[in-house]
Image 1 (cartoon, one colour):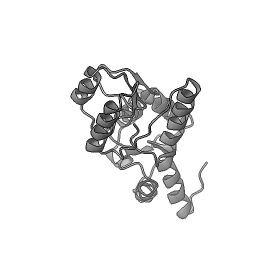
Image 2 (image 1 turned 135 degrees about the vertical axis):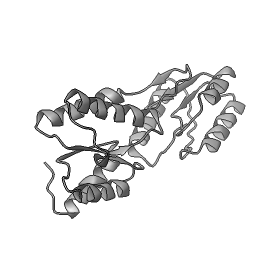
Image 3 (image 1 turned 120 degrees about the horizontal axis):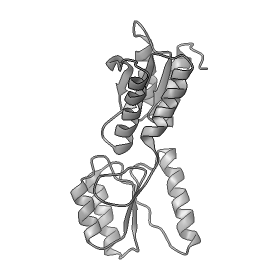
Image 4 (image 1 turned 60 degrees about the vertical axis):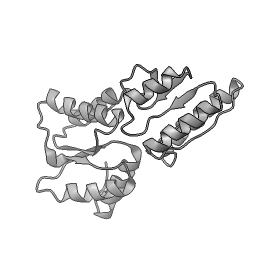
Length: 200
Protein backbone atom coordinates (compact mmCIF):
# COMPACT_ATOMS: atom_id res chain seq x y z
CA UNK A 1 0.00 0.00 0.00
CA UNK A 2 1.73 3.15 -1.23
CA UNK A 3 0.89 6.83 -0.87
CA UNK A 4 1.73 8.13 -4.37
CA UNK A 5 2.64 5.93 -7.33
CA UNK A 6 3.00 8.95 -9.62
CA UNK A 7 6.21 9.81 -7.73
CA UNK A 8 9.11 7.92 -9.42
CA UNK A 9 10.77 7.42 -6.03
CA UNK A 10 7.85 5.37 -4.74
CA UNK A 11 7.36 3.58 -8.06
CA UNK A 12 10.97 2.37 -7.91
CA UNK A 13 10.63 1.16 -4.31
CA UNK A 14 7.35 -0.64 -5.04
CA UNK A 15 8.92 -2.31 -8.08
CA UNK A 16 11.82 -3.57 -5.94
CA UNK A 17 9.45 -4.85 -3.24
CA UNK A 18 7.38 -6.68 -5.83
CA UNK A 19 10.46 -8.26 -7.43
CA UNK A 20 11.63 -9.55 -4.06
CA UNK A 21 8.21 -10.93 -3.16
CA UNK A 22 7.95 -12.67 -6.54
CA UNK A 23 11.39 -14.19 -6.05
CA UNK A 24 10.24 -15.87 -2.83
CA UNK A 25 6.98 -17.09 -4.35
CA UNK A 26 4.57 -14.44 -3.11
CA UNK A 27 2.04 -12.55 -5.21
CA UNK A 28 1.54 -8.86 -4.47
CA UNK A 29 -1.52 -6.65 -4.59
CA UNK A 30 -0.82 -2.97 -5.21
CA UNK A 31 -2.90 -0.14 -3.74
CA UNK A 32 -2.24 3.60 -4.30
CA UNK A 33 -3.87 5.75 -1.61
CA UNK A 34 -3.04 9.15 -3.12
CA UNK A 35 -2.47 10.39 0.48
CA UNK A 36 -6.17 9.71 1.25
CA UNK A 37 -6.57 8.33 4.79
CA UNK A 38 -10.06 6.97 4.08
CA UNK A 39 -8.88 5.15 0.98
CA UNK A 40 -5.87 3.80 2.87
CA UNK A 41 -8.14 2.40 5.57
CA UNK A 42 -10.46 0.87 2.98
CA UNK A 43 -7.57 -0.79 1.10
CA UNK A 44 -6.12 -2.26 4.28
CA UNK A 45 -9.53 -3.59 5.31
CA UNK A 46 -10.02 -5.23 1.90
CA UNK A 47 -6.54 -6.79 2.06
CA UNK A 48 -7.33 -8.20 5.49
CA UNK A 49 -10.62 -9.61 4.16
CA UNK A 50 -8.59 -11.45 1.51
CA UNK A 51 -6.45 -12.94 4.30
CA UNK A 52 -3.14 -11.63 2.95
CA UNK A 53 0.13 -12.92 4.41
CA UNK A 54 1.22 -9.39 5.30
CA UNK A 55 0.98 -5.70 4.48
CA UNK A 56 3.84 -3.40 3.46
CA UNK A 57 2.64 0.18 3.88
CA UNK A 58 3.96 3.64 3.19
CA UNK A 59 1.56 5.56 5.44
CA UNK A 60 -0.44 8.42 3.98
CA UNK A 61 0.09 11.88 5.46
CA UNK A 62 -1.27 12.21 8.99
CA UNK A 63 -1.77 8.47 9.50
CA UNK A 64 -2.79 7.91 13.10
CA UNK A 65 -0.59 5.78 15.39
CA UNK A 66 -3.78 4.39 16.95
CA UNK A 67 -5.05 3.24 13.54
CA UNK A 68 -1.76 1.48 12.82
CA UNK A 69 -1.83 -0.23 16.22
CA UNK A 70 -5.40 -1.37 15.52
CA UNK A 71 -4.31 -2.87 12.18
CA UNK A 72 -1.37 -4.64 13.84
CA UNK A 73 -3.66 -5.92 16.60
CA UNK A 74 -5.67 -7.88 14.02
CA UNK A 75 -2.66 -10.19 13.67
CA UNK A 76 -1.74 -9.38 10.08
CA UNK A 77 2.04 -8.77 9.79
CA UNK A 78 2.57 -5.07 9.08
CA UNK A 79 5.76 -3.25 8.03
CA UNK A 80 6.04 0.45 7.20
CA UNK A 81 8.41 1.72 4.54
CA UNK A 82 9.93 5.08 3.64
CA UNK A 83 7.86 6.90 6.29
CA UNK A 84 7.46 5.89 9.90
CA UNK A 85 4.85 6.69 12.51
CA UNK A 86 5.60 6.34 16.22
CA UNK A 87 3.30 3.40 16.82
CA UNK A 88 5.65 0.55 17.71
CA UNK A 89 5.39 -0.87 14.15
CA UNK A 90 8.43 -2.23 12.29
CA UNK A 91 9.68 0.31 9.76
CA UNK A 92 12.26 0.41 6.96
CA UNK A 93 13.54 3.74 5.70
CA UNK A 94 16.41 6.12 5.12
CA UNK A 95 18.31 8.43 7.46
CA UNK A 96 16.46 11.58 6.41
CA UNK A 97 17.99 13.74 9.14
CA UNK A 98 21.54 12.58 8.41
CA UNK A 99 21.13 12.82 4.64
CA UNK A 100 19.92 16.41 4.76
CA UNK A 101 22.62 17.35 7.25
CA UNK A 102 25.30 15.88 4.96
CA UNK A 103 23.93 17.81 1.97
CA UNK A 104 23.99 21.00 4.01
CA UNK A 105 27.50 20.39 5.31
CA UNK A 106 28.67 19.85 1.72
CA UNK A 107 27.29 23.25 0.69
CA UNK A 108 28.56 25.03 3.81
CA UNK A 109 32.06 23.59 3.27
CA UNK A 110 31.98 25.14 -0.20
CA UNK A 111 31.33 28.59 1.21
CA UNK A 112 27.54 28.89 0.97
CA UNK A 113 25.98 30.85 3.80
CA UNK A 114 22.50 31.50 2.42
CA UNK A 115 21.00 28.10 1.67
CA UNK A 116 17.30 27.75 0.95
CA UNK A 117 15.20 24.68 1.77
CA UNK A 118 12.40 24.05 -0.72
CA UNK A 119 9.62 21.66 0.22
CA UNK A 120 9.85 21.91 3.98
CA UNK A 121 6.94 20.18 5.69
CA UNK A 122 5.85 18.64 8.97
CA UNK A 123 3.15 16.41 7.47
CA UNK A 124 5.33 13.29 7.34
CA UNK A 125 8.30 11.81 9.18
CA UNK A 126 10.48 12.35 6.11
CA UNK A 127 9.55 16.04 5.95
CA UNK A 128 10.11 16.65 9.66
CA UNK A 129 13.42 14.79 9.74
CA UNK A 130 14.80 16.54 6.66
CA UNK A 131 13.79 19.95 8.02
CA UNK A 132 15.45 19.08 11.35
CA UNK A 133 18.63 18.08 9.48
CA UNK A 134 18.62 21.40 7.63
CA UNK A 135 18.14 23.41 10.83
CA UNK A 136 20.74 21.38 12.76
CA UNK A 137 23.39 21.96 10.07
CA UNK A 138 22.71 25.70 10.18
CA UNK A 139 22.94 25.72 13.97
CA UNK A 140 26.23 23.79 14.02
CA UNK A 141 27.68 26.22 11.46
CA UNK A 142 26.31 29.16 13.49
CA UNK A 143 24.23 30.35 10.55
CA UNK A 144 20.78 31.89 11.04
CA UNK A 145 17.66 29.97 10.07
CA UNK A 146 15.86 32.57 7.99
CA UNK A 147 12.13 32.09 7.45
CA UNK A 148 12.39 33.65 3.99
CA UNK A 149 14.73 30.84 2.91
CA UNK A 150 12.46 28.01 4.12
CA UNK A 151 9.70 27.28 1.60
CA UNK A 152 6.82 25.14 2.83
CA UNK A 153 5.10 23.64 -0.20
CA UNK A 154 3.78 20.49 -1.78
CA UNK A 155 6.44 18.27 -3.42
CA UNK A 156 5.61 19.04 -7.04
CA UNK A 157 7.60 20.36 -9.99
CA UNK A 158 5.33 23.41 -10.28
CA UNK A 159 5.89 24.31 -6.62
CA UNK A 160 9.66 23.99 -7.10
CA UNK A 161 9.50 26.27 -10.15
CA UNK A 162 7.51 28.90 -8.19
CA UNK A 163 9.82 28.64 -5.18
CA UNK A 164 12.89 29.26 -7.35
CA UNK A 165 11.31 32.42 -8.76
CA UNK A 166 10.23 33.67 -5.32
CA UNK A 167 13.63 32.99 -3.76
CA UNK A 168 15.50 34.83 -6.49
CA UNK A 169 13.30 37.91 -5.96
CA UNK A 170 14.53 38.28 -2.37
CA UNK A 171 16.75 41.32 -1.69
CA UNK A 172 19.50 38.88 -0.70
CA UNK A 173 18.75 35.63 -2.57
CA UNK A 174 20.26 32.26 -1.64
CA UNK A 175 23.38 30.96 -3.33
CA UNK A 176 22.33 27.32 -2.91
CA UNK A 177 19.13 25.31 -2.48
CA UNK A 178 18.39 21.94 -0.89
CA UNK A 179 15.10 20.30 -1.85
CA UNK A 180 12.80 17.87 -0.09
CA UNK A 181 12.83 15.54 -3.10
CA UNK A 182 13.96 15.14 -6.71
CA UNK A 183 10.66 16.33 -8.17
CA UNK A 184 10.99 19.69 -6.39
CA UNK A 185 14.65 19.87 -7.41
CA UNK A 186 13.69 19.46 -11.07
CA UNK A 187 11.19 22.29 -10.66
CA UNK A 188 13.77 24.54 -8.99
CA UNK A 189 16.28 23.83 -11.78
CA UNK A 190 13.69 24.62 -14.46
CA UNK A 191 12.76 27.84 -12.64
CA UNK A 192 16.37 28.97 -12.38
CA UNK A 193 17.07 28.17 -16.03
CA UNK A 194 13.97 30.13 -17.05
CA UNK A 195 15.54 33.12 -15.28
CA UNK A 196 18.83 32.58 -17.09
CA UNK A 197 20.66 31.29 -14.01
CA UNK A 198 23.19 28.53 -14.67
CA UNK A 199 23.33 25.80 -12.05
CA UNK A 200 26.75 24.73 -10.75
